[in-house]
Length: 276
Image: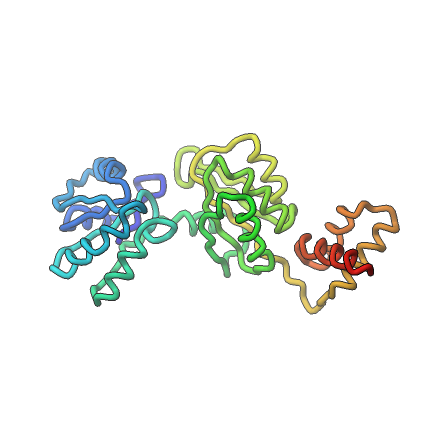
């Protein structure tokens, strides 16, 4: 497999040109995009070109494995970046490994690593979460799974869903949680917008275009203090008695304890239902 440029074609490594010219079979996510890439690189493939995308990945994998077993050199490329990273490739690699076929890679550009490097957020530990679900309820559920995740989070998102995604992130992870929206990386109109999730959600509501990668700061370290639910409820009540609205009181207590607002809210609701 080989990584392809995520924007600037000059980022293509020399080995990519060699492999495109010498492969017996090129499996491409989009054959039209491949044609434009080879023209830009001034390389003429001599091997057979076949499509390999989400719709035919399962059906075409056995055919490609047969070619590998017959001694053919098969090159897998996607539209941009490294295959298998939220793109086709995993099935073919797994099937080839199962047949004891050697698999190697031509390293190339990666939107994940490029966004991390530009984000200004900690990158010593991170996890890639791919695309969030499109449905609002499923999206919130997925975000709640990582609301206590300490590592920096990386997501891909479509531009027309970015505002909804950032708003959901702000709701679950906290509006002040730092993040960076990386748009059109390595392209002419590259932009990195940094700020809190609530601020970024408001910015994205005006409309954003291009390929999007979102980097989100991990959950804060609570340190040695462990605050139980009863104490959280007590702190909210103290603030309410001092004149704060419940919503603001919950947000303030959550920030003090280094917890997601949802956790404090759930504690308050549970206490109310229990009559405490």
